[in-house]
View 1 (cartoon, rainbow, N blue to C red):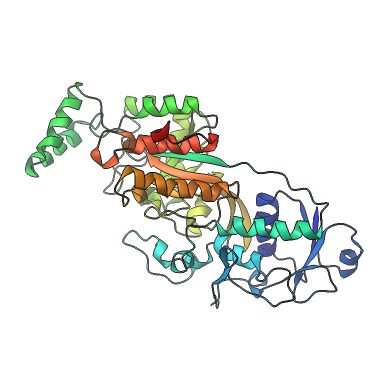
View 2: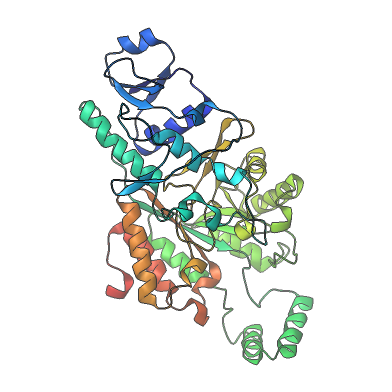
Length: 439
């Protein structure tokens, strides 16, 4: 156990220490504002305040963890050993920067509450992030900092025992549209055929007719492949199904379709099933609740988590809705068009509500690569090399690597050539097996 003294124990302080000391390093941590209690404590301890009492382990605190609300922050990113840091402190501090304030800034998504230019769908762009602008988006810096903090702490307190973390991967399979052509209903099918003719998409029309006549498998029907992969993998995949109303943004099937219900039930026999919140429902608690209840009626079990359509997050309201609906995990924390660590970590974190200044029970499971973000790399070898770098980056801190693919990624479209190999590479990386191309 580590005892921490601070002149004030704020909710922000508890959150930052909780993620670094408890969730990453696996230590118990207690706090005190009593000087006598701190000085009398015989075990490992540190002070986190403006100046040390003596020669104890000391981290010079930044003001961020003792403030409320959003303020303008003067951030200077500097190189530190083999990574970066910010909120640098004086020479007296045992660390050259305030690791806890810097971690809080990234974990709380502080910058997403500040003024920024959203994209066409109202999303926070990776290009607006501090991490991208200072070239550390590809590093789980909070975990890296935590391991460096552990090294310094253990030199001061050799008796501290840190439990070992194990590298693991978390596959997330997003299902925005279960089938490309089948089970669409007569009107959607007729409209699809007419659009193919008007736009001279004769190859697509040919495929559509073959599928509708049961001469060819639907291009989005990759479920036997995925279930077979699941049977070979020790932990369960997360499937998120879109069940909201059909709209311009969400072209999903209706739960009135027996084939769609049967598919969800069959997937739930092997994997975990979550909900993909439709784009138009993100601001409506009533609609989100209705969709959640409909999915639970199909699976006969609670929804295990959620993802937002188009990967859109409106902080803090998006997460408040999930808490209200008693959804305990979310898988939306990541960038759809960039590989990297949106919250600066590869460890599941709790959502901190900046408006209410509270740590909530909602657990955020980041994804660090999406299938679409790999399309910029032309050859399969280039994609594999990028993924190998990502795997080794997360492996060095024994974190959890989240990757998000779609059901259509495993179809026969030329766009997704080689992605079954990439998926196998991801799964094998946890087992420390060679890549699919070398096996």
